[in-house]
Image 1 (cartoon, rainbow, N blue to C red):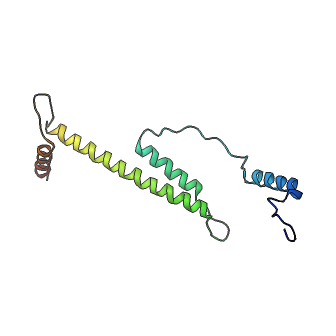
Image 2: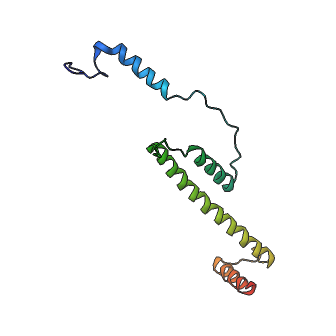
Length: 133
C-alpha cells in the first residue's frame, strides 16, 4: 500500500477488508461439488497399481494452452514413482509364486528333519531350471 507504513495484510486500518479478502480466497479454492467415492479394496499390489492408474488419469489435465499446473505435474510425478514401486512388488510376487510352484513340482521342501541351506536350495533351483530348458 503506497504511502502506508504497513502492507495490506498487516495494516490495522484495513483489517476488516483483509479478513474479507482472505475468507473469500479460501472459499474460492474449495470445491464444494466433489463426490465421496466408495472405499476400495487395496489388499494387493495389483489393486494399488489399479488405483494409482485411475488417479493419474483423473488428475492429469492441462489448460486451454496445453500448459500443466505445477501442482498437478508434481502430483503426477509422485504417483508415477509409486506406480513403479508397486510394479516392482508385483513382479517380485509373481517371481516368488513361480519359484514356489517349481519347488512344489519337484518336491523340494524344508521339514524339521530335513534342513537345507539357502545356498543348497538355490543350487537345486538352478538345476531344476536347467532340466526344464
